[in-house]
Length: 326
Image (cartoon, rainbow, N blue to C red):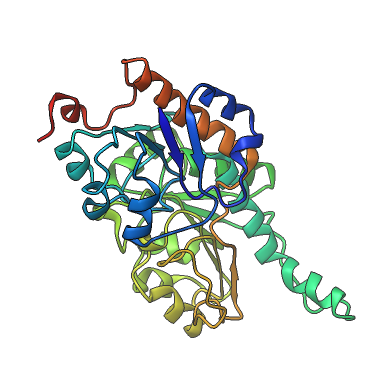
């Protein structure tokens, strides 16, 4: 098959073990990011299969309509960036492994790194030293402080394991179903939503973004946090009400935030008001950006291509496409 891989910005995949799975296919790797539909349509004109790096490129109807040779879109995890109905109408399969019971440990690790970096002022202390200074302030330990985890899923449970190793009590909040599962597992669920945000020294959000969870974290939630508390988001920016985090940081509740996700990505404006907040630690959506995680994810993605080429597709999201579309 003619396989095109989008958004491999550092041409990483060719050097990973998983790339050998594409032996025998005609593979084109694009190492830049393009949003212009005309350019994408020209690049992908001969593509029979397109591989995606999560949500980096949206696959919408205007592009799909201009790719008559396309048969398969292969990716991993959720797919809010893909117009599934448009794919189905054109007879294009979407295959996406949902990796049940396999959390992104890379994202969990970054969450913990952000917590430690924000609490111990690591970026500021390092910058002070390189600038010819010495200590620039006093950080805070995390042992004995309360970690609040919003969302009772795979990544949150991995973060909770790290918290235990660091001597932190953990409290939970989630959807009604998530709270019920947490209670059944014997962990501590906060007495109320307000109590969750008030009592936690650190709140970390681990929820999938979908229409029902847009704006899940409100301005009132953030305002309930203490002035010495830390808010962490390595999930999706859309989980927080638009503009609420910037307003909260300016108001000083919570006192700090550490985030890896933004409403518009890639964010390359150094004068962006949120980035300019002195009480914000930010990284450029690197939660899953490790060689190990890429190899894990693209093993699934390339397996889906080979299964399709063999006539036995797996992890099919829209099986009706194989029956001639909608």
